[in-house]
Image (tube, rainbow, N blue to C red; front, side, top):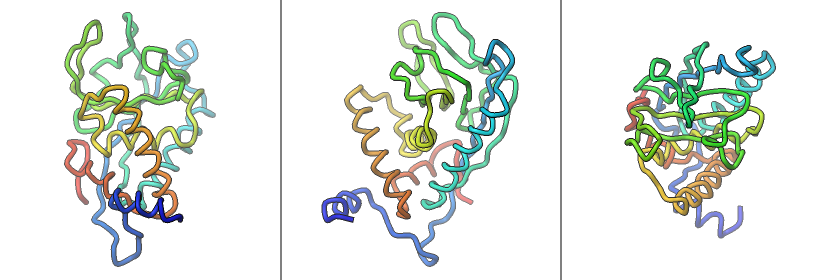
Length: 205
């Protein structure tokens, strides 16, 4: 690692992981909602379900470095309600979980940049968009890559989704989180991700 990268990493509060330094594990509850409305109501294909599990497994391996583990609950039959905007009906959502809606392709009102992912936290009613009490992530498998799901989890783990940032702040959060994810993939525990220990959907094991 170059000197500049070491300086930046030190500012992030990372630590090389060894057996003596492993932090106390944090267990994060994820509620995976599989879109029954995908493909004209046929639901997700076996290939898409397998692809999601591959992405979740990658996230599991990466965040284990920082002592973050996942408890994933699988829910079939969820769907997006369309009424000028897209929303998951409250009956599928849980307060003490990251509600991860998995579909084939996300609408432009959720994923305007076609990144395959979007995350948000509780928010008040704004204009024509309703408020929500829940933490949510949307994953569109057609546009997502292997790094999309870890990136979206990072917004929750750094508590970005507790705030309502401007476009500029969100841009810098994206850059910061991607850099920390890169460090984590190279074996460095990112203690900034462990801020999620205070979230209602996480607990210390």
